Length: 152
Ligand code: DAT
Ligand code: MG
Image 1 (spheres, protein in one colour):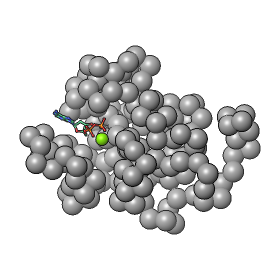
Image 2 (cartoon, protein in one colour):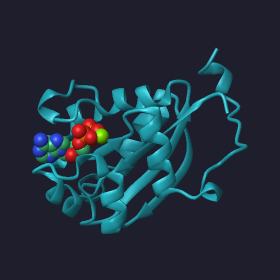
Image 3 (cartoon, helix red, strand yellow):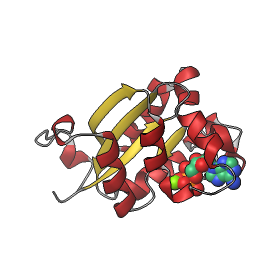
Image 4 (tube, helix red, strand yellow):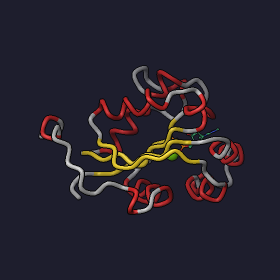
């Protein structure tokens, strides 16, 4: 597979606020390809595994409580430089620093309610996709007819 894959999730605040369509649309419009999608509630153990790098930090317990508090939308997006592109669509971690035009810069106010998650590196992407999706849940052979209009 020549192109990258990244894990993106709409957090419980984004789902509760009715922002699923708005958020998915931004990744679609950027040109990324959706290869995995599911609405799910995250178990505490999955949440702790996903956010393992933050274990021991003062905000960890609150973060786990928040991410398990309601349904999320788990997604896998594919494309050239998908990991960096998705992070740029999402914007800075703290919405107060996020540029207008990004999801967090347009739709969020507070660090603890920043509506969306995106993998921060190739290693994180592989790990996080593995936590949330089985192999059979990800498309392997879907070629979009518009591909040549997005990637040279
Ligand atoms: P990102 O979600 O941009 O990858 P991160 O991995 O550093 O950011 O942190 C994961 C989430 O934890 C983040 O989206 C919001 C929350 N968080 C991070 N730093 C925090 C802090 N200092 N206080 C409260 N929540 C924080
Ligand atoms: Mg992170």
